Length: 213
Ligand SMILES: Cc1cc2nc3c(=O)[nH]c(=O)nc-3n(C[C@H](O)[C@H](O)[C@H](O)COP(=O)(O)O)c2cc1C
Image 1: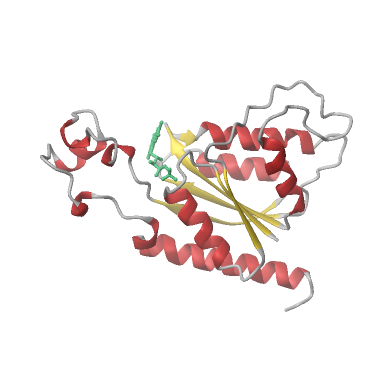
Image 2: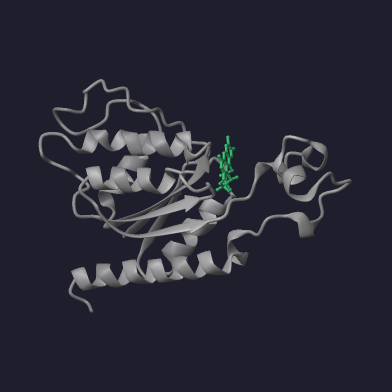
């Protein structure tokens, strides 16, 4: 099973679309999980997990952690916030600390794909996701990047807000028209193709592992 995790705070953002497109291309059984609306704290370093590799915080991460353990591969997508991974994604990955005590590495050997949405040169979204996968002894086998959809287009004030992305890109607007909107993932041809390629390769690798191809 391939687990896809969208760490975006938005239920219908670019991250969801990119993760879903990658999963769809695998030809494998998949499980898609969105972190939208979930309450996921950061790791507190309490070490309650040291003895049994089970996190003792009672929040929504535990269901995500269980899904990670069941997966053969994990496609993790997150948006760039201020040059780095968004807080929800960071917290989710931090909590895998509980899986890696006493030489156990419960995610070891699972395949991983990182997906970064938005972010300029120097953004650490991709490197952070892949570093966390590496520290869990997963094998990173692919990555994908796509352009984001700035919140300024839908906040209600974008057309006349001098500090926002809409005015920065189009100047002051009476009305934000459809033609001003950034492309959704399905209209980003290059990223869409990369999702298809990455998903297909991931699926083929999993089938080869099972001796099916
Ligand atoms: C708090 C916040 C900070 C952001 N900072 C950046 C940034 O530094 N660079 C960037 O390229 N995009 C930034 N964005 C834009 C998001 O990456 C973009 O809206 C992306 O599409 C969000 O993913 P989603 O569509 O899956 O929700 C920021 C968005 C928010 C809400």
